[in-house]
Image 1 (cartoon, helix red, strand yellow):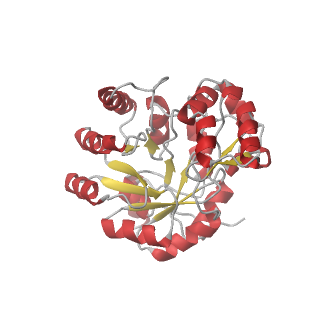
Image 2 (cartoon, helix red, strand yellow):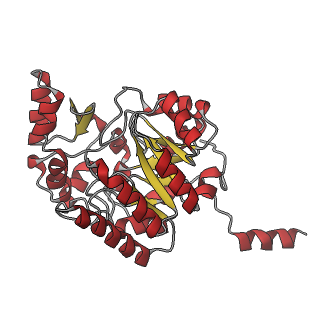
Image 3 (cartoon, rainbow, N blue to C red):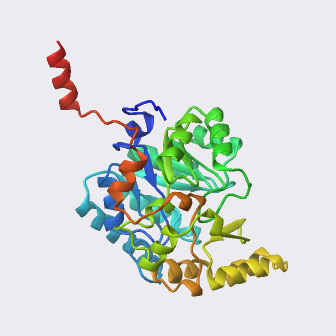
Length: 343
């Protein structure tokens, strides 16, 4: 397949990164080593909720200091940009602390998980005053909330399709249907998210108007990621055909087959409420015990449809270079030398 070679675009310029690829802030499954590896490979690494932890922090102070500690560990491993979310738990009272933490620790980019109806204007103003760039991802992307985010001053927008892992959008619209809708609705650059795990997904995203990709599942079975080794092998050995889909709050979840996942599918078929299914899934604990600790039948394994294209455990660098193989970086010195020789 003949492709256009890309040198740089608005996303690489805005975020200050080599390649237009961002690693999703997966709960429990990030730490300083992993995030630094993504950033050092040329993408944007993001520390997710519970970054570096094996158990939940107990107090508000512990949550803040645990994230501060992981930020500083990451800084010791990379001089490249990385980020963290402003929403790190179901306790929204922590959002102000996370905004302050991003500014105090001089992170150049803030990641905002967009929730309709929440007033983001105050934090946007605070970030803008501090020179922090804003990467914004609505839980369920729509033309309306995309335009609202643009009006608020968001720098880069993520359009997520139903193909993603984790908490999927409430509307069942595939990645390659939602991306062009959002691209056509706004003037700011858009990243595609959901089911992208090889260069074909990247090329398709760019063909639909995206200027970058936002990926999670493809980074799980990497050498640097803290996902349990048996789970990494399950991902490598599975495809989207194996995934189980069940209702929960606020919409749906999908998991590789585990004893708990099968139980949740059965409860769903029998008419259990979304709240009952959420309680039975054990929330974040169900993800932690399965994906981080490797006790797969006691929890669930949340991945997206892109696992069909993951066939081996690789380094983060190999993943980034594979997905970004059409993106050519011209080093300034080499460019100037070539120009001088041509003259």
